[in-house]
Length: 118
Image 1 (tube, rainbow, N blue to C red):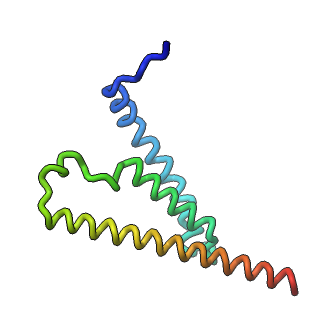
Image 2: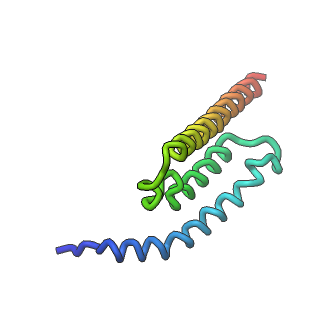
């Protein structure tokens, strides 16, 4: 019979693994940065999408989208409203980045088709 991993063991393992994973994600983002910030010319949609995915994964790793447990009990209505406002702003920014990446991909596809026909 398989043994279950105890919760305290899981927390210990995840806490020790988190910095290593964060370092790997940081390395991935640093490798993508010149392709996303325009240092190497026009930004490719695939690079932009990969950079957003790496940042999103790093946020998940540190659970930045979750309200910390100790804060859940003692938040005022103003703090809750501010947190919701910030989350909405972040979601809008992520949507805008995705929209621009899709537009860039469409432009690239159109350019490739035009070049193929000339």
